[in-house]
Every structure is written in structure tokens, then in C-alpha cells.
Image 1 (cartoon, one colour):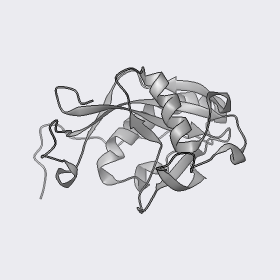
Image 2: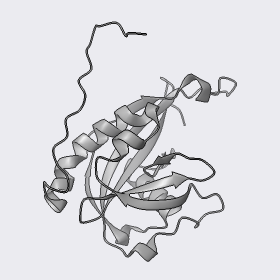
Image 3: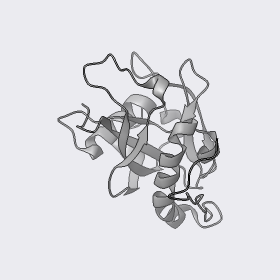
Image 4: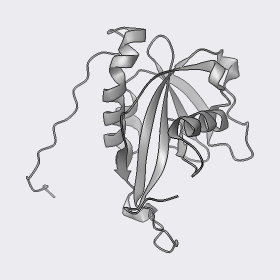
Length: 180
């Protein structure tokens, strides 16, 4: 499903340990690390899609998590030109996402990355809350920054200000030409 503007509806999941660290996973057969995310089916709400993606990508069930917060609307990112499949019937230029912050309530053994025929991830670890901003693929950094900035107060309420310190987003100058 792709909207009229070329964006695929999607959910992003920030799974947080009580100490403020977040779940960070490596994509299968790639060197890229990211948060769990996935598309929303036409018959699903974003919340339903989030729980489905959580189960498919991490093996976790609703009983393993508490929903702490969500972004109030869509956050968008564009794919780099080489990743756009122009030959497809519907051309997807990027994703629009609703992001969820989940508190992990399970045991580490509950995480099962190989629960589907086509696993998304082959390794995972806990990282500091803001770590992903510098380590996710470049074209996703802006959406990660906006999602984490919105979800940080919810995370701070659980883990505390030392575990999830204030973070300032880089200011983007509007109307100024890019230097090449």
C-alpha cells in the first residue's frame, strides 16, 4: 500500500529496557542496524501493525511490553534515489511512520529473531537511548531524531533524566542554499 504522494504507511518501534537503553538490531545479510519497523496492511490500525511487526521481527508478544507513547502523526523519510524502484507499478519514494515507545517487560530469552521464514534481523543488543542517531543509515537519521525527541519525555518518565538526557536536534536553516 502506497499513498498518493508515494509514501508507504509504516510503524517504527523503539523497545526500551527499564534503564533507558533501547533495542538495536542488525539486518540480516547487511551491515546496517536499526529499530524494528514494518508496513501497515490495509486491514490494520497502526497499533495492530506495531504488535504484528513486534512479533515477526523480535518474537515478542503484547504481554512482553507496555506501550508508553506514540508520535501524534506521520513522520516521513525519503529513500535515496538508488533505492527507488521506478519500474514498479506504484513507485514508493519513502515511508511515513507512526513511532511507538515500548517498555520491555519480558526476559531477554523471550527475544526470538528467527520466528519467521524470513527473519529481518540476525543480532541485537541494548544501546543508549540517543545512540541510534549517529549509527542508523543516513537517510533515516532525521526521522529517528524526530521520533526519539518526541518519545524521550515518555522514556525519561520511566528511566530517569540520567538515562535519557536532554538532546538538542541540529537546527536546519530554512531558505539557505546547500553548500556542495
